[in-house]
Image (cartoon, rainbow, N blue to C red; front, side, top):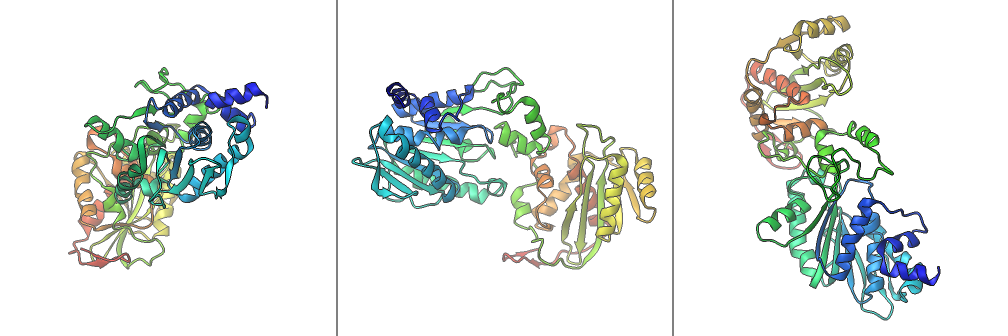
Length: 466
């Protein structure tokens, strides 16, 4: 490396990233914007930064794998705290920064890693007070300070994101642990893919609107929409077109639920306000799929048919459910999907025989005779009951949501797409989720055809539900 390259790397974060990644790191418009914000963090002109970007778009490469080393090179007496959802990931980030300074620190900044303090979880700069400590959320941070605290993806996945308990725990950790470690004038960087309205980034943004700390926010969806984003892109533009074009992103979208795409890729979590179903009501009464089921008195397969299997068409909802002698309901399987009418009929019949069901409950609003005829074309033996929607969807759904609230419905295992439809559907939205409809038909039939008084049931996690 010549003197000019070393000087550029000292002054300019993108140059540092390019050199220390041996030329493999490439600039892009959104990464340049990110680097500009980090320059302001380093200079102290901003001290609070939230970065919301989709997966695999380079946010951690810049913020967690490169910026700490560059900042310590320029401020070797500063302490940096690097956290994530788990210690292993944080230590991976730490190791990369340590190795960059081992290889380039003396040449670019005139510094070296301390031999006395060089573990992957905590290392220092020789002859200086500064260094880096890495920990997971809830990790050992007590007694350690920070001039810069980085929180990179504090939520591991959907299980944590959907848990009110975990999200509350994360906020308490931020308030009582990480925030109290910050030095006067210190900076906090929160970088994450959005998961929920009230995730850490969402909570901090809402606090800033009511007198809380003010944050610089970089919000960059995978595909720009009608609302202006931090790059001021016109609608329909990919965030990183050189790597992930619009066609590729649309193919990813096709594999995700609307909730997943809106939150993870578009950084716009769907508001659950107004939803009849609450995730806590599902999760608290979930039945372990490895635990034997009680004897079920009646089993049905609910079917909400789609008219066509063309690209972009609705799914056919196929939900298998049963009821036991205590008046508790069990969601046994979700076989929904985009299929031709005949393929959907085959799948419904398969579920009927697999679970030894009593009836197939099929909505007849979408061509009832055709649905019945197709099922009988596949197999004439299953009993088919056609039902017609004569009342509004919310009126039909409310009694079923009430069963969940009472702890009477148990999902056997996890049915992610179904649960997301339940917990994000709002009757005012005008949409008609097919899995939800099939579930409502199945449970409505079970509840109306089995007159039972609910009795207590003991779950393996402790507690009694009635």
